[in-house]
Amino acid sequence: MSDLQSDFEAAVASSKSLSERPDNATLLKIYGLYKQATQGDVTEKKPGFGDMVGRAKWDAWNAVKGTSNDDAKQQYIELIQSLS
Image (cartoon, rainbow, N blue to C red; front, side, top):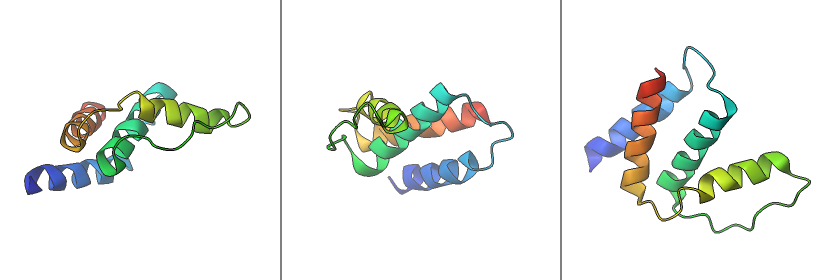
């Protein structure tokens, strides 16, 4: 378990120094997996129509609802590695 956590923390660190900024869809996927890995399923209400960024983030997080923390961490690590 600790290996997965340390790999996840390393991926989080390297996500901040990617050579190229990912497209918005990829950024939202990164966000959703990170939130799922660190907080679990989304429990907040979906933001209103006036908050388009908030809605997009909520949708990205909700798309991975039901994924275990460990699976979300592994998917996050693999996604960041594919971008590096």
